[in-house]
Image (cartoon, rainbow, N blue to C red):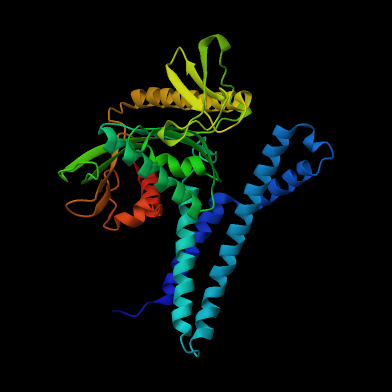
Length: 364
């Protein structure tokens, strides 16, 4: 194995970080942080809790960006000194190589974030997973996909609020919707939208035959007050029902769960995570606004594509294949990124797939 050229690697990392610093504009970030700190320090800030929450959330995100960028710059500057000191220490080179690899990975992750410059990319995300073709097998697969994303969010310390889950009768789920709150959650997770296909020996087949099943993933940005998504109350049908858990067991004794149907578009959303019917209705309305916002965005994009003569099919359809039998393989059909470590992927280790998806989307 050829010896590593440490200084060449450090120079390459430094060059990448310089380009990232130009894109993120550290002086501008610091100015934003100063302005937001002034707003956050206003005596009457919490007279409007919703506006206050927005200001403090933005401040936290900007400060996090500054700390991350400044910290990486310091680590890159420390690398040559680290290797110099490591030369005379037993095991020192190995430790220095680990730090070099860790810095390289962190810079690569930050570089991917600079590609997230879409209109809504910095928003929180609403993820809906639905079982599709495959019966009970598909319902079980939908629950496996839900667990995969929840584990991914847990690994990254992303805040998750499960808004509604509809359980299937025999096993798995019919659908679920949850909100992911994190910087650039929508931009990051939007590349996961599409149909996920599973091939495996079915645990529900007494003859142990191989089955194929499908689960659909929808990712939309969370709306903000400035989005102006007007919804006429006359165009919404409201149904209330009792919340339920797995197997149909009642978890509430009142009709607190809410289902909203937007009559013009046929979009249906539900929420059952709150105790109050009023709270569930408000949350469901926010989800409906997000769906309508995404619908508007897709319509605008379709017009742009038509003007450009873009007749290609949506990449959001069948986008990833998970094969558990007769061999082990997960492959993204858009980027061709693949791995044989299926258990790790289903346990939430999907960073490489997401990074490849973001880079692919930017280049396509």
